[in-house]
Length: 368
Image 1 (cartoon, helix red, strand yellow):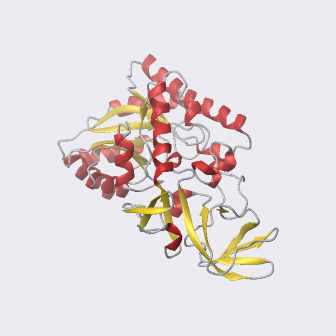
Image 2 (cartoon, helix red, strand yellow):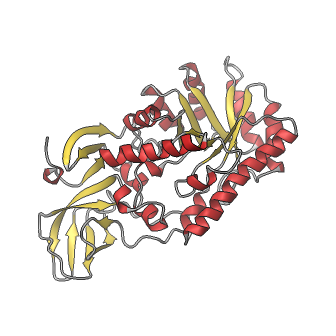
Image 3 (cartoon, rainbow, N blue to C red):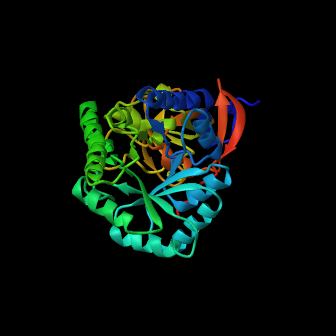
């Protein structure tokens, strides 16, 4: 097999040992807490990696979009949560198709109007769709407010013959804006309580809530310990990236995905890499995150800061002397692995610097 340093650039590299260890660490945490693990596949978009997660003990997967769920189902994965509000008739038809294929599907709801669309789309089918209530735990994106709003929506679900209530879940994405780990812990605590307390109020009203699920890579080890939580859904933790390192929830040795890049220009005050915004992306953090410097971290070369990107060029400014020359190759830890992976057709899987396989990014571009 080839050494990764001989590959054409830019290439998306996946360290197999780090990947397996990251998956094991999440699964071990879930097992220790006596809860389930339902990873979000929007990070890796790979049937192969999803199956590794299932082999490690995951009960199913989480998808962002219907098209991702279709790819996972075609790959043989049949327990899927679509953690996104759906009311489009076209997408509901696709949900019915997935149910016809025998997929154990769950769909996010956070609005009574969407219940009507789902009911209407299912009425001519023999199926009942499981729905999970999304509660807002502070991100202020989708979700009903915890407590009584969740109860009201739960009651509305019970009035629809084609829907059944399976759980309550949330995503504390605002943890990405935390400035300290103590702040992450506080957000994780509130994330878990938003779900548990909503479930408690529903059950006081006589409505059973079997699943109480939390997500967010920065917070899952906090929220997952809250009594009453039954499931975690971290996505990015399968790889980690520069943002997670900046937040203090991982270190560079945990980062399984890197970009292999070549030096294509060498100047007195800068070097030029063949990885621009079409490969590294312009992401410097979500939801107010300000923990990264530049557009990726070059392993072994702290003297180079990737300060700006054009479409095909990465401009690295020099903070000290560098030994990098034209045609030298470097590995870059991306700021945000999820968006970078979506730019590539395949992973070059390696172990100890040697290519061992190539895996397809099956759900690349699946954003519908």
